[in-house]
Length: 99
Image (cartoon, rainbow, N blue to C red; front, side, top):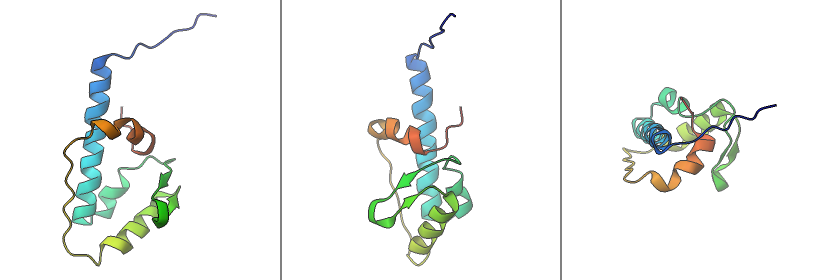
């Protein structure tokens, strides 16, 4: 049997980083706007999110409920994202991959 290896190019990685940065921006925008429908689009169906003391989540609905309860009473929030490169490998596991 012949094995086929996929060669990952810098172009592939650049595209991955751009897509992950887009999801991170969408995540921050959803929280700041309290747009919980948009927030749900950031998560893969089988995502596992560990938010420490806030909780460990395997269900996007439960995570959304907690975030909604925590953020809805707050005033405006302003998430700022300036550099996504250090976290892009970790984010691959949790955020929706659309490629």
